[in-house]
Amino acid sequence: MKGHTMNKRIIYKNEKGGVSVITPTDCGLTVEQIAAKDVPTGSPYKVVDVADIPTDRSERSGWTVDKADLTDGVGE
Image (tube, rainbow, N blue to C red; front, side, top):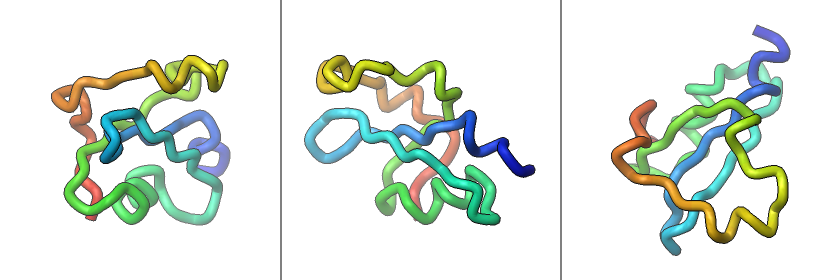
């Protein structure tokens, strides 16, 4: 689905307790395949709309996510 990945972001809780954001590209893989390979092994993740990500990067350091909300899969 070309363009589909452009509207999505993959989020997961990193080892420092913050939220890491992966921006998928149109590389021939689905968002789920990208998440499975790029999210650290054993880390749960969530695929969200780009609109759900803070646009001001200075706000991102204070952004948190509840691990219970990371329900779309786990990094392989």
